[in-house]
Length: 88
Image 1 (tube, rainbow, N blue to C red):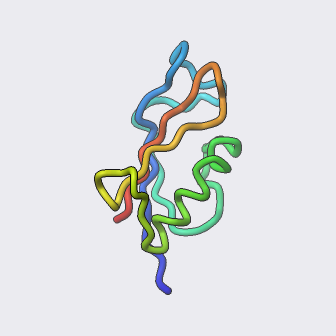
Image 2 (cartoon, helix red, strand yellow):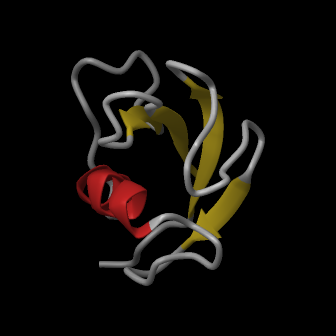
């Protein structure tokens, strides 16, 4: 099965609005493999990875209105970074 590219974009940062890794709203990566993109937090990538894999291989989430998108948060309980994943 052919995999699709997925764009990961920082949508917002909750809490104090500061990511300890330095990510900022608007930061974006195009992903087409299982490798952590440059300058992306490994903790955040591990949270994103299952959703990324589903989108890359044609799956979808029943709770998302758009089958080509998913919203995912990093595990930081004080300053959760919210990511938008979009299949291309």
